[in-house]
Image (cartoon, rainbow, N blue to C red; front, side, top):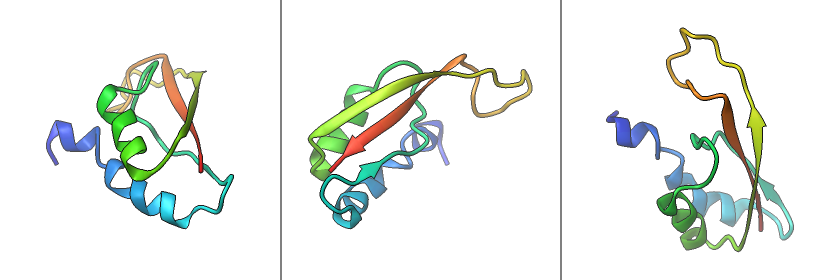
Length: 81
C-alpha cells in the first residue's frame, strides 16, 4: 500500500456502512485524522449518503516506537445514518 492508500483505505467501506446501518445507526472507525476531517474524508462520507457527520477529539499517548500514530490527538468519528 502507498502512504496515500494507508490513510484512505477505509473510504471504500463508507457506502457499504451506509447501506448496512439502520436509520439512526452510528458508524465509527479508526479515522486516521488528528483534529478534523480532511475535505476528501468528509466528501467521501457525504457521497456515501451520510448527512450527520460529527466527531470528538480524543487525547492519546502513543509509544515513541508506534509506527502508525505519532500525534497526541485523534478524531473519533460519530457518523449517524
